[in-house]
Length: 283
Ligand SMILES: C[S@@+](CC[C@H](N)C(=O)[O-])C[C@H]1O[C@@H](n2cnc3c(N)ncnc32)[C@H](O)[C@@H]1O
Image 1 (cartoon, rainbow, N blue to C red):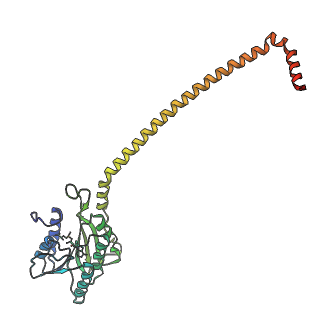
Image 2 (image 1 turned 180 degrees about the horizontal axis):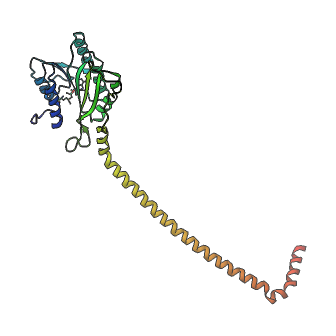
Image 3 (image 1 turned 60 degrees about the horizontal axis):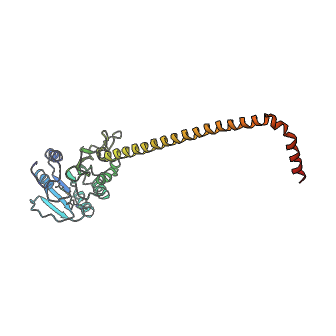
């Protein structure tokens, strides 16, 4: 379990995945996304019959109880499920790990839940921490299917890539438990959201440096604004000083005018100025 070099799951995911299979020991199992066959080897070890789907034909030697289906799961899976339903067979276990687009993941999950061959089934979805896969799986209306006992999309939380795929969100196992014989009670919620949505928490952690940058940019703007305020305050002080100087000068001139008009020479020459004004009016 720890040494497989091509198994695209973390150790925690591998352990949980293998643990579910060991407990369940499915009679009939489906895998969407064969790839290099790592998860298929585990499913095959614990299951009596396995059908594994991939767009690309896998270069694999498989045991007799494993059937490989090459092609688009969105076309092939509903056909195979329909055949099982007509035969009255139940699919005990499914791994959803094929199309990682939001629409693709949603369609695979909805095709499974719609099928009458999916009655008593454990569905595990991989990469539930990835934004696209998670958006697709979050868009599924689990509550519309009474046979869905619960969907817990963070059964094993995913991770934020560090040395490998830095900044990308991958991994995470989601669990959907289906039981038509023992359906959900009316007061039970289909989607278990008792914990924080793990993928969103990871996204927030990933975007935290951006928030630190935003904080630094805001601090820079505040600093520039403070400098401007200091400049304007200095300008205001200069203008107020000029105003005070102008007031002193105005007082001085008022005093000069008052002293001049009260002087004896000004009073003696008053008739002369009156004559001058009269002459100007006649002209
Ligand atoms: C992440 S790998 C699967 C890994 C594998 N389950 C494991 O753990 O070893 C995803 C696989 O899904 C296949 N795939 C992508 N879109 C698909 C589709 N629409 N139908 C079927 N397979 C698809 C890809 O070719 C790829 O091999």
